[in-house]
Length: 247
Image 1 (cartoon, rainbow, N blue to C red):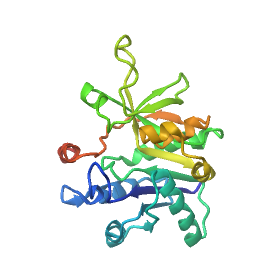
Image 2 (cartoon, rainbow, N blue to C red; image 1 turned 90 degrees about the vertical axis):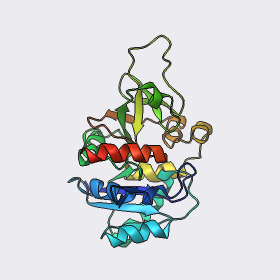
Image 3 (tube, one colour; image 1 turned 60 degrees about the vertical axis):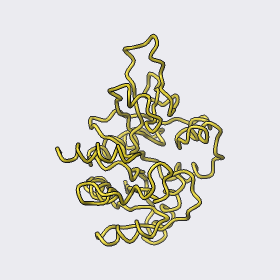
Image 4 (tube, rainbow, N blue to C red; image 1 turned 180 degrees about the horizontal axis):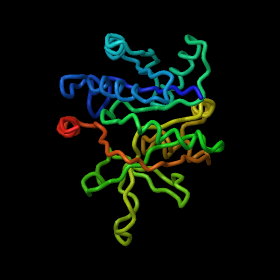
C-alpha cells in the first residue's frame, strides 16, 4: 500500500493567527508536526499542504516537501484533496491511502499513524478513520475548540460536536471522547468527499467529518494509546510546550 501523509496548514486562523509558525521549544509548530509524522515507517511520503508561502518556504528550508494549494478551501480535507492530485501528477504515483494530520498536533507520535491506518489495511469496507482520544476533565469537555464525538457499539461515529456531548446529567460512567485529528482516507474516498455537497451540520459545527455522516456514510473511530493536545489558542501553545519539555 502506498501511503501518503498530508499536513494542511494555513496562517489565517481566526482563533490564532500565524499559528503554524508559532515557536515551541525554539522550532515552529509545523516543523514539529512534520518531523514527527515523517518518522512513521508506514509512510511513502509526508508533505505539507498550504496556501501560505511562508509555511511553504519553511518546510522546504528543512528539507521537507510542501505543496501550494488555493486559498479558497473552508475544510482541511478539501485542501488535502487538491494537494493529493498535484503530488500524484508530479510524482507519477497513485497513492492508496491519504493520512490527514492537522498542523496543530505537535504532540503526534509516529505510532498514531499506525493506529489510525490499521482498519483500512484490515477491513475493505472502511473508507475513513479518526483517532479517538479521551477527555479527562470538565474544562476540556466544555471547550468549544475540543471536538467531542459519540460512537455506536461498533466504534463508528454517531455525531461530532463542539458542544459537550454526551450529556453528563445521568450517565456519569460513559467516557467522554474527542476527535484526534489524524484522519486516514482511502484515496478515492477523499476525492469523493470533495464532490459531496457541504452539509448543514458540517457548516454549523465546522467539522469536516459531519459531511460524511450527513451523506449517510460511516467514520470509524479508533481509540489511541497516546495522549496528545491540539493547539488552538496561545494558552494551548504554552501548555503543549510544557508537556513537550517532559517528553
